[in-house]
Image (cartoon, rainbow, N blue to C red):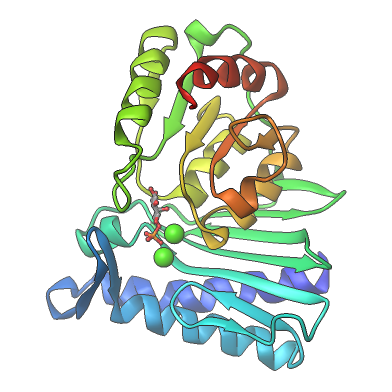
Amino acid sequence: MHPMLNVAVKAARRAANIIQRGSHNLDALRVDKKKPNDFVSDMDRASEEAIIETILDAYPKHAILAEESGAKGIGESEYEWIIDPIDGTTNFIHGHPQYAISIAMAHKGLIQQAVVYDPSRNDLFTASRGVGSFMNDRRIRVGKRVSLLECVIGTGFPVTDQSYLDTYLGMLKDVITRTAGVRREGAASLDLCNVACGRTDGFWEFNLKPWDIAAGSLIIQEAGGIVTDFQGEQEWLESGNIVAASPKVLAQLLQILAPHLA
Ligand code: IPD
Ligand code: CA
Ligand code: CA
């Protein structure tokens, strides 16, 4: 295992110990609202602190972009770690076991190492660029389905910025009617890993942040899938608008979404 991936796994497991202990006493959890439908708890902050400490212990000069504490040292190092301490906070604070820790390492802007850890199922997804994607040390690949009518597609609803809700609902209607089903599970990093291991056949969502998608995207790519924005281009990390699937499903999914874009 690449030494930086090893550090990312160590950080994710340390964070998971903290948040799983917290998950047993949700009534004592302090939850603040950052904006409508966007929550942060004590556990998000404690998880993030443990992750950053583990990374900086090993690589004190590396830059950090983390959801709750923001950016540190960006532009001063070629190495940047992108961290979501709990992806799926709304699920977590409800005791709904669909959330994950997401950690990616980018070198000169290109994501090289990725970890998404689902502590409720003990599923550890990892990827290193050029090496492949793994779930609990077993190689994973995207699904083999090609007929959209047999495909299950993941998505996320627009909950914080609802200005494009009507556009989204038009897309959702078309995807529902032309596939075997749609899933909205509430943790984008795991939604991407589900595509990577074939539990779903594709995924789309608007307006995600780098920490939601940096790790999961490399895990899909190294599992043989493709990640694009809604135009089929590579601006997904900047725009946060993401479509991901196996190559054959991706083309069909983009075709369904395209007529809804202004
Ligand atoms: C959220 C989850 C969710 C997605 C939201 C994200 P958070 O992340 O990934 O699936 O629909 O847009 O903000 O806030 O729980 O880290
Ligand atoms: Ca997130
Ligand atoms: Ca989060």
